[in-house]
Length: 300
Image 1 (tube, rainbow, N blue to C red):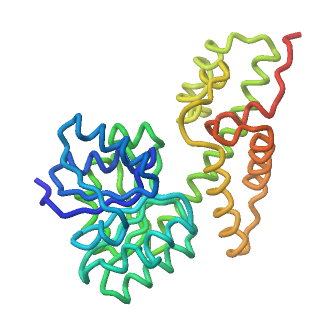
Image 2 (spheres, rainbow, N blue to C red):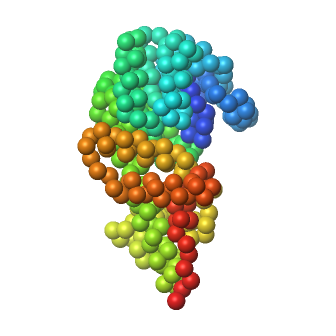
Image 3 (tube, one colour):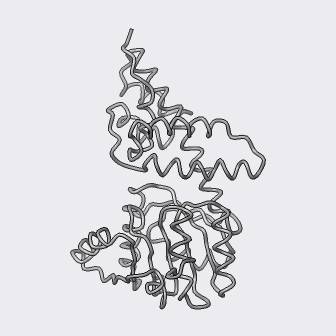
């Protein structure tokens, strides 16, 4: 049985909210913080109905003051810097020997900066971005890619188990974020091909369900095909991971590739396709809405 810890969780979005609930169900003593009070009240109502005892703080620093482990899941580099390094950030009050685990998808440079600032205070840090989307967070089936020391990752692992299906230590600080960049590049490329394949099948007058059945059992199979083919063909895009966030992640990936002297033409092209969907008002739609950039053709 996993030992119980005093835990702070900063950021109660579509990922952080469910993850916080899993930590409380696992028997940890949890104090939460969210910048939006409206969202905090929403989660508080849900957890109260479930009889989960999760307390709330009015600053990240207050949430973290007595924590053994602080988890963070916010939006981007700037958000992360504010809730960790800012005047009322968690590092202002975290005790030496505590552990900081960041689930935000940020730049590798930000992850390394945060790890350095934490180390100067005697705090270990793990950059631990996740994959699996809202459904993965709700169902406790997230894939976690970790950067940091082996000791720090092993300290975090038994606690993260309650919302994870896979936890992999990739390398030193920043490596988890770089692995997440590779993950997003793969997703973008697959959705680009999947969008064009569906439009081809439609234009040719194929039965879309049978086409999926025919090709999903072979080398073309992917998570995106299994989970998004049918919804893409029905123009359903009100779930999953938003295009706005995918563009943020692809921006980090393209910047890191440039820093390493690499060319990433497919990622750059799909990123621009996503920019087109954003410009048409689709930024909050699921990433599979990439297909809306391609007009439908009538079968010949």
